Length: 242
Image 1 (tube, rainbow, N blue to C red):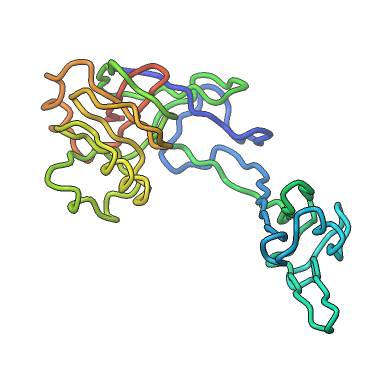
Image 2 (image 1 turned 90 degrees about the vertical axis):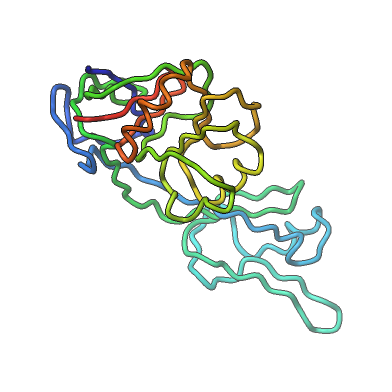
Protein backbone atom coordinates (compact mmCIF):
# COMPACT_ATOMS: atom_id res chain seq x y z
CA UNK A 1 0.00 0.00 0.00
CA UNK A 2 1.03 3.63 -0.41
CA UNK A 3 1.66 5.97 2.50
CA UNK A 4 2.96 9.52 2.83
CA UNK A 5 5.03 11.38 5.41
CA UNK A 6 6.48 14.85 5.91
CA UNK A 7 10.25 15.03 5.51
CA UNK A 8 11.39 18.18 7.40
CA UNK A 9 13.79 20.55 5.62
CA UNK A 10 16.30 23.09 6.97
CA UNK A 11 15.38 26.75 6.70
CA UNK A 12 16.44 28.61 3.54
CA UNK A 13 17.14 25.47 1.56
CA UNK A 14 17.45 25.76 -2.22
CA UNK A 15 15.55 22.80 -3.67
CA UNK A 16 16.40 21.26 -7.01
CA UNK A 17 13.31 19.02 -7.22
CA UNK A 18 9.62 19.73 -7.70
CA UNK A 19 6.23 18.15 -7.06
CA UNK A 20 5.56 14.95 -8.95
CA UNK A 21 9.21 13.92 -9.32
CA UNK A 22 10.34 10.41 -8.41
CA UNK A 23 13.31 10.17 -6.08
CA UNK A 24 15.74 7.47 -5.04
CA UNK A 25 17.37 7.10 -1.65
CA UNK A 26 20.48 9.29 -1.60
CA UNK A 27 19.36 11.69 -4.34
CA UNK A 28 20.28 15.31 -3.59
CA UNK A 29 17.08 17.25 -2.93
CA UNK A 30 18.75 20.61 -2.39
CA UNK A 31 21.43 22.56 -0.52
CA UNK A 32 21.56 24.96 2.42
CA UNK A 33 24.26 27.02 4.10
CA UNK A 34 25.30 25.85 7.56
CA UNK A 35 27.29 27.85 10.10
CA UNK A 36 29.00 26.19 13.06
CA UNK A 37 29.04 28.03 16.39
CA UNK A 38 31.87 27.42 18.85
CA UNK A 39 31.56 28.67 22.43
CA UNK A 40 34.71 29.34 24.48
CA UNK A 41 34.47 29.75 28.24
CA UNK A 42 37.09 32.49 28.59
CA UNK A 43 36.37 33.02 32.29
CA UNK A 44 37.37 29.44 32.96
CA UNK A 45 40.32 29.39 30.56
CA UNK A 46 41.75 32.67 31.86
CA UNK A 47 40.90 32.06 35.51
CA UNK A 48 39.11 35.42 35.78
CA UNK A 49 35.83 36.56 37.35
CA UNK A 50 33.19 36.79 34.60
CA UNK A 51 32.89 40.58 35.03
CA UNK A 52 36.57 41.07 34.17
CA UNK A 53 36.73 38.85 31.08
CA UNK A 54 35.52 41.62 28.75
CA UNK A 55 38.59 43.67 29.62
CA UNK A 56 40.83 40.81 28.50
CA UNK A 57 39.37 40.55 25.00
CA UNK A 58 41.77 41.47 22.19
CA UNK A 59 39.21 41.31 19.34
CA UNK A 60 36.01 43.21 18.54
CA UNK A 61 32.63 41.56 18.06
CA UNK A 62 31.61 41.23 14.45
CA UNK A 63 35.19 41.18 13.20
CA UNK A 64 36.73 38.28 11.35
CA UNK A 65 39.32 36.07 13.03
CA UNK A 66 41.80 33.57 11.64
CA UNK A 67 42.83 30.32 13.24
CA UNK A 68 45.59 31.12 15.72
CA UNK A 69 44.57 34.78 16.26
CA UNK A 70 44.81 36.05 19.83
CA UNK A 71 41.30 36.31 21.33
CA UNK A 72 42.00 37.24 24.94
CA UNK A 73 44.91 37.75 27.29
CA UNK A 74 45.28 37.94 31.07
CA UNK A 75 48.43 39.78 32.12
CA UNK A 76 50.01 39.58 35.55
CA UNK A 77 52.12 42.04 37.53
CA UNK A 78 55.12 39.73 37.14
CA UNK A 79 55.15 39.85 33.34
CA UNK A 80 53.66 36.42 32.67
CA UNK A 81 50.32 36.07 30.93
CA UNK A 82 47.63 33.62 29.87
CA UNK A 83 46.69 33.81 26.19
CA UNK A 84 43.72 32.28 24.37
CA UNK A 85 43.97 31.73 20.62
CA UNK A 86 41.21 31.08 18.13
CA UNK A 87 40.81 27.35 17.32
CA UNK A 88 39.11 28.16 13.99
CA UNK A 89 38.78 30.86 11.38
CA UNK A 90 35.51 32.75 11.23
CA UNK A 91 33.88 35.68 13.02
CA UNK A 92 33.54 36.85 16.63
CA UNK A 93 29.77 36.40 16.92
CA UNK A 94 28.83 37.28 20.51
CA UNK A 95 30.10 37.66 24.06
CA UNK A 96 28.09 36.72 27.16
CA UNK A 97 29.27 39.08 29.90
CA UNK A 98 27.30 37.28 32.60
CA UNK A 99 29.13 33.99 31.97
CA UNK A 100 32.33 35.13 30.29
CA UNK A 101 31.67 33.06 27.15
CA UNK A 102 32.82 34.10 23.67
CA UNK A 103 31.04 32.57 20.67
CA UNK A 104 32.73 32.24 17.28
CA UNK A 105 31.00 31.38 14.01
CA UNK A 106 32.85 29.46 11.33
CA UNK A 107 32.27 30.32 7.66
CA UNK A 108 29.04 28.95 6.19
CA UNK A 109 29.41 25.69 4.27
CA UNK A 110 27.13 24.35 1.57
CA UNK A 111 25.40 21.19 2.82
CA UNK A 112 23.47 18.72 0.66
CA UNK A 113 20.14 17.28 1.80
CA UNK A 114 19.56 13.77 0.46
CA UNK A 115 16.41 11.73 -0.03
CA UNK A 116 15.86 9.38 2.93
CA UNK A 117 14.09 6.68 0.87
CA UNK A 118 12.75 5.86 -2.58
CA UNK A 119 9.45 7.53 -3.42
CA UNK A 120 7.72 10.43 -5.10
CA UNK A 121 7.47 14.12 -4.15
CA UNK A 122 3.77 14.51 -3.49
CA UNK A 123 3.86 18.09 -2.25
CA UNK A 124 6.34 20.86 -1.41
CA UNK A 125 5.36 22.67 1.80
CA UNK A 126 6.96 25.34 3.96
CA UNK A 127 7.75 22.76 6.66
CA UNK A 128 9.19 20.21 4.25
CA UNK A 129 8.47 17.67 1.53
CA UNK A 130 5.51 15.31 1.56
CA UNK A 131 6.97 12.08 0.17
CA UNK A 132 4.80 9.18 -0.99
CA UNK A 133 6.20 5.68 -0.98
CA UNK A 134 5.02 2.06 -0.95
CA UNK A 135 5.19 -0.35 1.93
CA UNK A 136 3.48 -1.67 5.02
CA UNK A 137 2.44 0.52 7.92
CA UNK A 138 1.97 -0.50 11.54
CA UNK A 139 0.12 1.71 14.06
CA UNK A 140 1.77 2.94 17.25
CA UNK A 141 -0.07 3.57 20.51
CA UNK A 142 2.65 5.89 21.78
CA UNK A 143 5.63 7.68 20.25
CA UNK A 144 7.93 10.65 20.90
CA UNK A 145 10.77 12.38 19.08
CA UNK A 146 11.41 13.37 15.47
CA UNK A 147 10.75 11.34 12.34
CA UNK A 148 13.68 9.02 11.59
CA UNK A 149 14.71 6.66 8.79
CA UNK A 150 16.93 3.61 8.86
CA UNK A 151 17.24 -0.16 8.43
CA UNK A 152 15.02 -2.13 10.79
CA UNK A 153 16.66 -4.64 13.13
CA UNK A 154 15.33 -6.97 15.78
CA UNK A 155 17.27 -6.64 19.02
CA UNK A 156 17.85 -9.76 21.06
CA UNK A 157 20.26 -10.54 23.83
CA UNK A 158 21.88 -8.44 26.52
CA UNK A 159 22.94 -4.81 26.55
CA UNK A 160 26.44 -5.93 25.61
CA UNK A 161 25.13 -7.10 22.23
CA UNK A 162 24.54 -3.51 21.09
CA UNK A 163 27.52 -2.39 19.03
CA UNK A 164 28.76 0.20 16.56
CA UNK A 165 27.24 -1.94 13.80
CA UNK A 166 23.79 -0.84 15.02
CA UNK A 167 24.52 2.85 14.35
CA UNK A 168 21.86 4.48 12.19
CA UNK A 169 19.35 1.66 12.65
CA UNK A 170 15.84 1.48 14.11
CA UNK A 171 15.71 -1.30 16.68
CA UNK A 172 12.70 -3.43 17.62
CA UNK A 173 12.77 -4.83 21.15
CA UNK A 174 10.78 -7.75 22.52
CA UNK A 175 11.20 -6.40 26.07
CA UNK A 176 10.56 -2.99 27.64
CA UNK A 177 12.92 -0.12 26.88
CA UNK A 178 14.95 0.82 29.97
CA UNK A 179 17.26 3.73 30.79
CA UNK A 180 20.50 1.74 30.37
CA UNK A 181 19.40 0.71 26.89
CA UNK A 182 18.61 4.31 25.97
CA UNK A 183 21.95 5.65 27.21
CA UNK A 184 23.96 3.11 25.23
CA UNK A 185 21.79 3.68 22.16
CA UNK A 186 22.45 7.42 22.41
CA UNK A 187 26.20 6.80 22.53
CA UNK A 188 26.01 4.52 19.48
CA UNK A 189 23.85 7.04 17.55
CA UNK A 190 21.02 4.58 16.99
CA UNK A 191 18.03 6.26 15.27
CA UNK A 192 15.05 4.92 17.21
CA UNK A 193 13.76 2.26 19.60
CA UNK A 194 10.44 0.40 19.34
CA UNK A 195 8.90 -2.06 21.77
CA UNK A 196 5.69 -4.07 21.84
CA UNK A 197 5.58 -3.57 25.61
CA UNK A 198 4.83 -0.40 27.55
CA UNK A 199 7.98 1.48 28.55
CA UNK A 200 8.57 4.56 30.70
CA UNK A 201 8.93 7.96 29.03
CA UNK A 202 12.62 8.66 29.54
CA UNK A 203 14.17 12.04 28.57
CA UNK A 204 16.22 11.41 25.42
CA UNK A 205 16.88 12.77 21.94
CA UNK A 206 16.18 9.30 20.53
CA UNK A 207 12.84 8.53 18.91
CA UNK A 208 10.89 6.08 21.08
CA UNK A 209 7.70 4.19 20.23
CA UNK A 210 5.39 1.37 21.31
CA UNK A 211 3.46 -0.83 18.91
CA UNK A 212 -0.32 -0.58 19.16
CA UNK A 213 -0.83 -4.24 18.30
CA UNK A 214 1.56 -6.74 19.83
CA UNK A 215 0.56 -9.21 17.11
CA UNK A 216 2.39 -7.00 14.59
CA UNK A 217 5.71 -7.88 16.16
CA UNK A 218 6.26 -11.08 14.14
CA UNK A 219 5.17 -9.39 10.88
CA UNK A 220 7.69 -6.62 11.46
CA UNK A 221 10.48 -9.05 12.34
CA UNK A 222 9.87 -10.91 9.06
CA UNK A 223 10.87 -7.67 7.27
CA UNK A 224 14.10 -7.16 9.19
CA UNK A 225 16.81 -5.15 7.37
CA UNK A 226 14.23 -3.34 5.26
CA UNK A 227 14.33 0.49 5.26
CA UNK A 228 11.82 1.86 7.78
CA UNK A 229 10.20 5.19 8.61
CA UNK A 230 9.40 5.83 12.28
CA UNK A 231 6.92 8.72 12.33
CA UNK A 232 5.89 9.84 15.86
CA UNK A 233 3.64 12.65 14.59
CA UNK A 234 1.35 10.25 12.72
CA UNK A 235 2.05 7.38 15.14
CA UNK A 236 3.07 4.87 12.48
CA UNK A 237 5.99 2.65 11.60
CA UNK A 238 6.31 2.26 7.85
CA UNK A 239 8.44 -0.45 6.25
CA UNK A 240 9.35 0.53 2.70
CA UNK A 241 9.29 -1.88 -0.23
CA UNK A 242 9.33 0.72 -3.03
